Image (cartoon, rainbow, N blue to C red; front, side):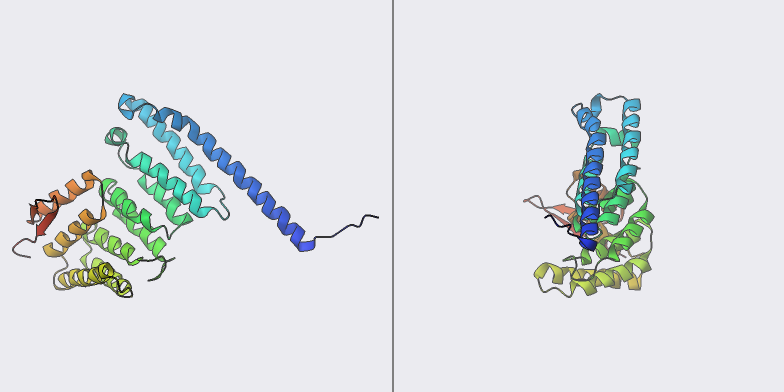
Length: 271
């Protein structure tokens, strides 16, 4: 004779988890459905598209971003953050389209990324570069870094002191907030000092030196030169490096190119 077996709370939990999994699959299917037209369009270079076509694609991307922002991901937050980051890389790297429409959507990508995975350390350099430098919205960049830092400590994720340095750079170069930058550099140095490797120790020293420049003079040219030098060291794309070098030269720094292609940056004679 068959017996009825009650699963009790475990059965309810199983049904809830199964429902969540099915909803996640459905949501991912929705994402892919929204993305397929775009993937088909990518086969054609943006150089071949007219401005109205590019603007139409930009409007479609705004809709996709709204969906990604609202979609429930359950335990897949980091996967969604990675997916959105890949979409950002595609958006940012489309030079012909960006020359015509700018970088106004950059903050929207990182609002999702930081919300879903605030410890995604690799996202913060492009966050700072694209929002502060290209989109000219440093307040948003700094606010997003502040949001991410609430989920970090000196050891989690490893080398999280790097975000404090990026925040300091944005404060100094794009807001002119020398005193705020000084405090961020000091915090970066404190967090970096908890590591024993050579790079972290070097960054501890340089962050404290930059903070000392700002202590003496919040508008220090040497501090700004140090910050732009950090930008060059942080990024890989040629456009950003060129902008940083132009800013360095405007500050009176001298850039010396070595035989191996590396560069030395000499501070202006007077601060």
